[in-house]
Amino acid sequence: MAEKANKAIENHKNFYSCSAAVMCAFADDIGITGDEARAAAAPFAGGKMIKCGAVLAAEYILSKKYPDKAPELISEFENRFINMNNSVVCKELKGSLTRKPLRSCRGCVTDAAEILEKMCI
Image (tube, rainbow, N blue to C red; front, side):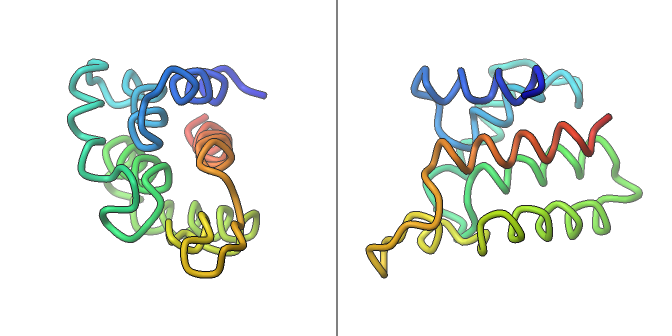
């Protein structure tokens, strides 16, 4: 596993939200501090914006790092994530409606960070 993906997992183990775990691991890629990353990630946490917070954080990083290519990269990111997990919707991933989770929050953080790290090289 790559360095930033490991950092995202450690962040999540240390009680960062799913979005903050990913955002803080990649903050230096877009020139922001950890505090700024946590603040930027706060609206994405816990499925508040329908999509998984880890996915939204990764998409935010892509949009800031590659503004001219953001739509294509975000589409590619989502396709990769969906291929792994069958959804980007938080409630579907957590199984909130079906009681059959597709992926744990930690798993979503791991997958989002691993995909993002490969895309940011």
